[in-house]
Length: 310
Image (cartoon, rainbow, N blue to C red):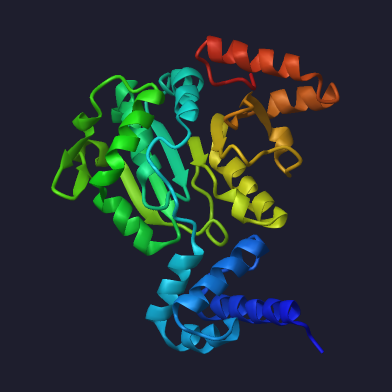
């Protein structure tokens, strides 16, 4: 006879299978403990006795399913989250991006958009925003609608202003939004080069020829198999010399794409994609030592030249 934990795992498996078959959303490779916690919280908030009680309502009630997906998705975010990360963008990434006549950026798993606008502000202050096309994606339609509107609680602004200045912001933060009684609306000039769209990292294809991909604090909710699949998607989507930025608890180390990248900043998880000739040369040298790899990248950055593989 199955114990309580085994029954809950079976119920969760059946729920995830139902979601995948009915709606095409595949949560089966998400971190198990996180899914179990969220499923139980959603069950309790709807007055249901078990996870299995979610299944018939999920199958037959699309509105109920939409609420469940929103609950399952990772929507926590804030403006200038981890200010030191933005300082590294300014110092180590933007000087390379500015060498391009046009710049393509993909912000994957953007949730409600606060970090997208944070990046846009820093690009604007660096003088390169007008050359940028930013694709901001998430699989949660409700979150995307919030991001498109760019309307946020005014009560959060005090914290965001402090984070903006800690990240290296140089102007009054109020330049970038219009304040109302209870909310602020991000400036239209920040939104003009941003395309918000639905994209599922589990199921959908690549965004080609990106110069910068940001996907911070999303992979921690995936199991190892799905992490590798998504990292391979990012690797294929980046140009040689393009940058990949992950969250501080995420890493390329021991992943299936680790040999395709050189670490730019270990603490803030910023890496640059190697070109094939450089990759082949380092493979022939049995990967070489990390100091030699970093010096090659540094020389490339110092010359403001992306063709590291030449």
